[in-house]
Length: 280
Length: 315
Image 1: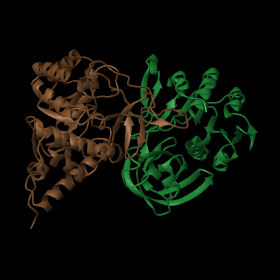
Image 2 (image 1 turned 90 degrees about the horizontal axis):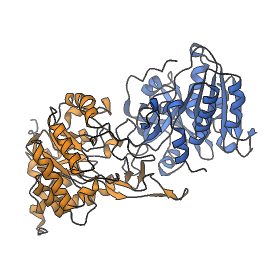
Image 3 (image 1 turned 90 degrees about the vertical axis):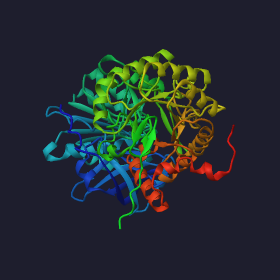
Image 4 (image 1 turned 60 degrees about the vertical axis):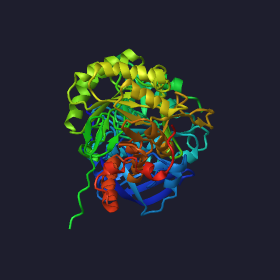
């Protein structure tokens, strides 16, 4: 299983928003004009967007790349409005300019030729998995892909058509049963693992990822998890966005922005993450 | 006709800096993290992430959160320890071709002494910055910087074991910054860094718990700039040591406030996270400002606000 080559370089530049589409009550799909990121981004990588050319709100916001279009020289991200920074993005008009850095971080390791891929998405965590499924759907990098997508309610199953359209099999789940199957996405993982798979890829809330990792470990199937954390610089300098890991036994903190955001689930200290998570 | 050349160089603690704009400890890693996004060679100097005697894992996450025109951090001095710093970080830092100021932090006076001794044997370190002001560790850190006797004792102890210029980085979380600055001077500091972060906290009202796992953290960013400028102003009036001013600098105008308050140099901190080449922009704009103002040497602006303010010193 080879890691994707790291992008040759990261870019910092001013780019234009070319399309904004509301895809749920709090969700927007943003398309930016940026040939460099379109050409360089790998599934799992992110861009760090400055929401305004001022110092309040202060920090950039990281967004996983959902899709690139190299011919058009564009890329898309999926965002959920959670605070004033994302609110500004949600209200931005096409042709607005944004300062971005990217593509940043390490993406997903592509599966080997043997075995199928299982992609487990929770809520907005679907974004990098749509990108991954899109790559796995292309003839030159084709792998049979089974998608599982869980969300709180029908409103949060945003972009499910985009996801299902690039998966060979697809299951959607909502916690409240307002659409598709009712339950947690992890309730539907066991039968998938019993069928066997080459690799599992997951992105979503930390507790969901912990459960996916636990089941994959039991089934002895490799698992890669894309992690989230409040982020500062995005390039590994500030050490703000760490998660606990246990690489080769030693407990330490690793940076989501630079060492991740995709981690081999085996090295993540899920117990420490569970302890740090308040349910709900 | 070309505009006359502006002399941006400043003298600080026996060092000649090509320009007065440094990057602050903890915001620029070990010099290579921003890669091609920054022309590091242009910097007046680089203060490394704090180095401790032994490796430190740092604090559990979440470690940062955004606030109004600022952010909180409680990193907890995560670093690989001085031996790994010397073997793995210094080689790349050396290649950058700018003065490297190594920020050191200890839990005891003996830690600082051991760090200073070890780093004195290491080539190409321009100065040591004594971190007496980290608010996010249980032992050491800010405990030193809020006590004038301890400040003097630790600076004096380090002074005895190294010939490297010593810069004491002070905490703003004190009632009398001048008293602490005097203690650092009496201990033998060559310069002062003012200020480290302000002890602060935020609460997540949905989860009804602190935003940071460490509960409290250090506030940085534009929000703290007026506090920092005031402290530079006060210390300048009482203590005859060069000062590196820092706290929320995002522009040449901000940097000039510190310089005119009395700082010899400035350090850009949190702004690096948002605009990696902000220091380069500030250097350019400083030069433009001097040209337009007919100032031949930026050093002529140090303390400029004092001479025209007509105010009395604190003393």
